[in-house]
Image (cartoon, one colour):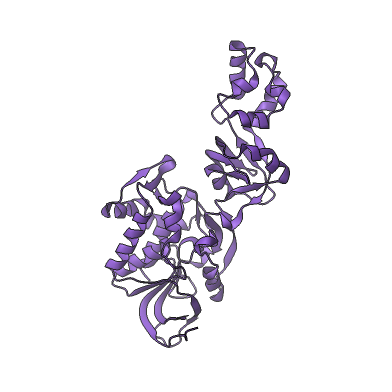
Length: 404
């Protein structure tokens, strides 16, 4: 093993994490003429960017507001996303000639590849002289006492003295792209509160009996209104039945609000007044079987799994008011109790993290340690699915980069 170098570089800003937030911070600080170094233990910058959005990077959303974020301080994100909005990032994307398109719910994706966003960020870094050091493990961090530089960061290859230290190391989601708890450990080292972390935007696993029951439906996607047990939130998007449980956009969204032991409620026919539609159908097609009539709204395999066989095979004219109520409960208030989530392995984000009350909402600097900043996913700000988390990364990174 090579010996650690005694050489110490004097720099203005050291950023831990070549993440979306870290790179945006580096670019912004570099434009101010600051000498910036970005360290990352991975072998490639922006791994999460490259794999996001199915490889096309859902880089922001046209409908950004504080209501799209989860935090113990729900107002914290307002300042950052107003100072550097989705429109600011969209303008940067346009300046680099990146073609993009809008999908449902205001989601913006690259036409070609997430590599376009990475190329843009790395080009911007190069233009302002940002130095990015990969395959670099942080060995030690301490507050300097010499009065000239505030922090000493030690790695196996190089030591750094820096006026400002920005932590953009991300959360625990997607460990296969080198996620680590480093950012939380740094916060704890400096006495900064950490809210407990959990997996967010993550599929559910099912109880053994439900898993066996629904496994044959694997691959089926259904437009659905999904809510949590406490009825604090609901989402109208697709759910996807998998061989492990439930996934799809609506499930990922509600997972961030779900607590272990709770049920989730699903309306598989959100646009239909079921009782009224059945009454009309009874008059028009009295002998038609219920399963045949329902097949215009739901996949036949779903009908066969959710409904009792005798009920599914009943003629419409034979349905009683009580049976129609049962149908409404089964199809429009389907209640299921997840066993758990799939955890950080497949989670898109990490809930919890560095306490927002410990940071300035305008600069992301800690209130108790001058020159120390936390940005991006490591902070207790978690967005919905659909580009919101990237926008938080761009916004928080820009704010820190303006002053660090």
